[in-house]
Amino acid sequence: MEWLNSLAYAAAILFGIFGLIITFIARDLDRWPRRLCIAILSSAVASAALEVLARAIYPVSPPFYRALILTDTLFAPLPSLLVFAYFLDCCQEDYRKKPVMRVLWALGAVMAAALIAAQLNGEIDAAPGGTVRFGFWLVLSLLLSLAISVICFAALIRRRKKLSNVQRVMFCACFVTSAWIKIFLVELYLMAGLVRRYQEQKEEAVRQRTQVAVLQMRPHFIHNTLMSIYYLCARDPQKAQQVILDFSRYLQNNFAAIAKEGTIPFAEELEHTKAYLAVEQARYQGQLFVKFDTPNTFFRIPALTLQPIVENAIKHGLDPDLEPLYVTVTTEDTDGGVRITVEDTGSGFDPTDESKPHTTLENIQQRLEMMCGGSMTVLPRESGGTVVTVVIPDSAE
Image 1: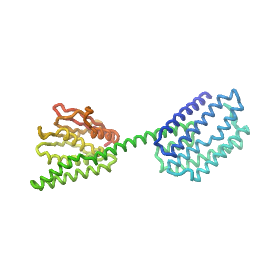
Image 2: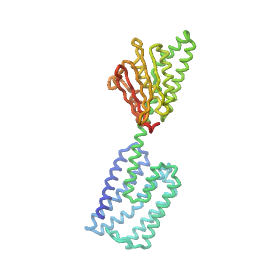
Image 3: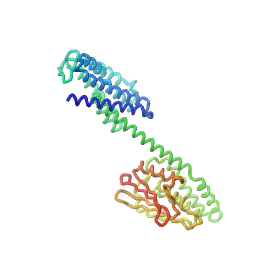
Image 4: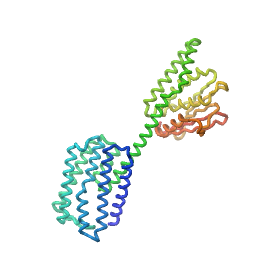
């Protein structure tokens, strides 16, 4: 059994050192949480290292062994108190100014002193496999340990609404486990937090790129639309009014997309796409024909998904000097969700050709993956043109 304990402590040391390396590398952590993580991991690693060193040296020098155990006992409450400080920090409270923190430090100091007195008094035989005799100092240390746990749990219950479910479980386990187990719990939580923060930063970067794409709408599209309205005012005022209305709806939906952080109903995206197409069809009379076959609109997609795909099809496929462009938009239920297909009869383009920018489609694909677990494929159409397929899983509907 002794070899198993030694192995566990050795694993804790290695795992803790690995956690310290991660903490030092992770420069995006806030100042105080980073310092607390370093303090927690360092104190727990030091405690485990002293235990391993003491067990290794016991056969050679029992007095030195007892000195190491007493040193370890002196700092025994430290990991728990640092975890509680980290708990208060996660609750957005300054642990340095909290009276409860001072009370716990005082109880921890008295508990450490009681444990040392129990060893010196013979109530605890610190040797590996030694016996324990219940006396005043040992009972006092146990009562103080119980008091610290009760205070920690009371604080956790009181502040539970300030924490996430993962944080509540993690701190609940930390308050009742040994120092080396705290290493695993804190480090796992730290790594999960870093992964979560990386994901949030990635999503924020995609969202910012989306906003930039919305704000940087094609200037020539706006210019040509305004010029079309200008000429229609003289030839067909009623139609000019309709184009202005469609163009206004298109602009409104584009600017509204800036504030959209999650998914939106597909019906909204479809309405936005139709407003855009109404403007384009007014500009390219007799050159652009669109067909919709969308029986299922009861699902959600990221904002600015369908409209940019259709716009991309027109941009690459429409040529006034060639045959008219036909665009078909369909939705179809599948076993795993919904499939959206945008098919055009244009000249097509090669999505693998790196000489042409395809930032729009790459942006859409990234947002589909992160926001709803969806996917997108771009393939050439057998009889000419392009087919873009978007799959939205059931979990995102």
